[in-house]
Image 1 (cartoon, rainbow, N blue to C red):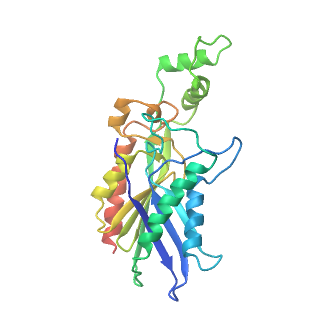
Image 2: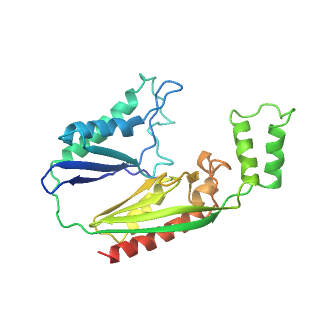
Length: 267
């Protein structure tokens, strides 16, 4: 699928010129490379530290890196293997590269004092996927006292997830939001969104400056592939990894574009 090389950011400062905050958005999966049993903010946290050091004038300055549509965008090439790296090395390299680009462009930023704001929020009800009778039987067999031989590494985990869908609700209500700051639009989706969905929202947005999407916002409802990607298959489409109906991305895109039209009209 496609990639999204753009880094978007919004920079805020007070009327007295004091820097307040910066919100950035980049479509890249977390990097990893941390010891086991470690909680890490990954390159998002390292990026924030670089920005706060470069732009903040006091301890109250806040920098944030949000996750763009990166459900299928990783920093690993599965075709060209690379050698082992030191712990935290890769996340520091990624954060340094992205923050350097933002800091360089930030020198050219012109601030505006008359910015209008608008926001829309919708609760959208979608169906949860349901496994077939054959899939249910296989999941039960995997978890039985005599499971099939040569099971894949994640078989038990996905058997639990499959049966969880059977026992769980048939529908899910998700929160979708659009925000407008001047001529910039922000969408939010509570899923790990595959990249081409974010690119489509950018391309069709009525806002003249830029529109970007924050994924995993207001919840986590699994991966969000397109119907085309469901047909291709792969990890992001597996039952349990992807819990919402196969047409979920189409319905979500339609609602978000309608909401972008509304916030654009309120300018």
